[in-house]
Image (cartoon, rainbow, N blue to C red; front, side, top):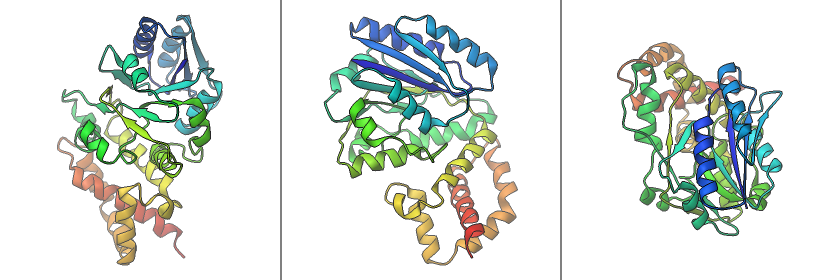
Length: 295
């Protein structure tokens, strides 16, 4: 009935797997659990995750090369045997002990079910502050907020989807890291596949420090190059970029970014990171990328 799919990279997700396994067992359903390690370079995490294979109805798959989250999710879906797929990112943990049950109760034949995510209000060390503040002030959305914009509010951190529907949509494998969930949500909307929002969140454990988060942000922005028109309706950054472009300010912004990038990054990696400055950082970096491609 249910395939629980966990893509992981450089993180131990043993406790997550045990919790989901316990809840699925308690629900008395037919299920399997597939955990795929995306060629982790942190041996301790990979070795720890190998014990997941000792759980009943569970498989631990070690990939031979790094695929990225989009391609790895597609791979897991094709490996799955059951009608419904529950994707859960390895850096999350269910808030509720009825997490599996709540998803199953909301399941329909042709809809995607999304329960949202939250952050624990525990101030991390300074080197993790940017990710923490961005998570609680920008990413986290209440059920009421998500219901107002069901496709724009969809993030693939944790969701349930009929396998046949997923294979109809799939993730764009050219997106190695970043905005693949935005494009997936856009495809759901284009194909009139409903997204059902429920109040059943996971905790997102922000595990990357400020410098790693900036690196991942730049990688994500790179994915948008060449998709400005296609994804503009879904990604606010592209809407702002289009306005800048119409005002012929792309090159000036890119020049200013070249002059100030180091000082901006110093703020973002400091003890009082500015989210407004971070928003400008993403826009200016996109302008910089586009300038290098302009004739």
